[in-house]
Image 1: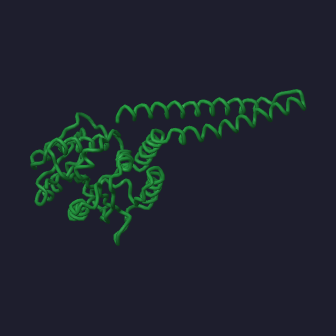
Image 2: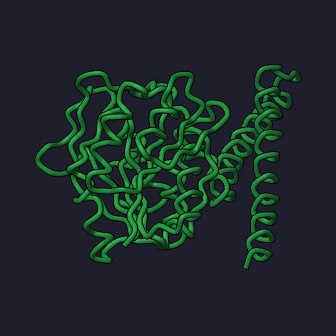
Image 3: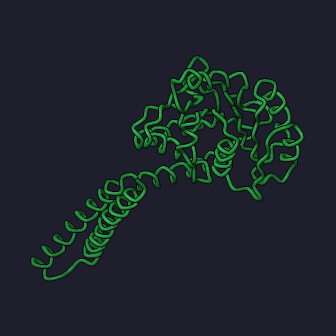
Amino acid sequence: MKIAIGLPAHNEEKNIAAIIMQLRKTYPDVIVCDDGSSDNTGEIARDMGATLISNPKNMGYGAAIKALFVKAKEIDVDVLVTFDSDGQHRIEDIEYVLEPILKNDADIVIGSRFIGKDRFQGPRYRGVGIKAITRLSNSSTGSNIKDSQSGFRAYNKKALQGIIPSEHGMGVSTEILFKAAKQNLRITEVPITISYDGDTSTHHPVSHGVSVILSTMKFISIEHPLKFYGIPGMVLLSIGLFFVLWSLQIFTEQGRFITNIVLIGIGGMIAGTVLLMTSVILYSIIGVVREEMK
């Protein structure tokens, strides 16, 4: 079985050599996506014997993951393990992430920071943020995953062939789970240990959170347009109608319109109508597109 380890890397010249050297002792096929680094990350990776993909500019974590997926399919690997290049992941944990796939118990395995005896030990605010994003992801996909944002994952050939990531930012982790759930791929988690000590880099928590939330909202709107746009539309339309009727009642009793009430009523009705029309139009378009793709 051909197993490749994929490393998305941006300005990781301090860590990349040691990681590749250790990885290749057990896993000869290492793929590095140099995502527009301004240092020597790409040159070091090539010199260390890794298969190198070079993005001409920094396109984002999601673009690097997509490039790794494409290269893995191109060289016909059976399993791709995505592994951070900043020194946070432990190489010895790869065998645990691989195990469910090698036993054919899963199509995607997530290395989770929130299960097992060595649970999340990073900054508290990061743990809270990851859990909040994971709940949002689970509510949208119907999953029960503990760590939807872990980049330490293994994908078998079925997952690699069925999923084509499109997100360029940090939302790619959620996107993959959306697409996996839609295709009924088997997903499981295994415990891993993360090191937040030493010279490791982390993504800015605010930009990470915003990217993931926007990505999640986008996929919810595509998968469930009637709920995403229709329910808020009905609420706004109802509020608008209430204020319009209230303003009419005041006019019949007092012979005058109260501007603020009228504006709220008209604005609510217009916004609600637009959202309802949007939900129906998108639902129809998405239905046609899906029929064409069958």
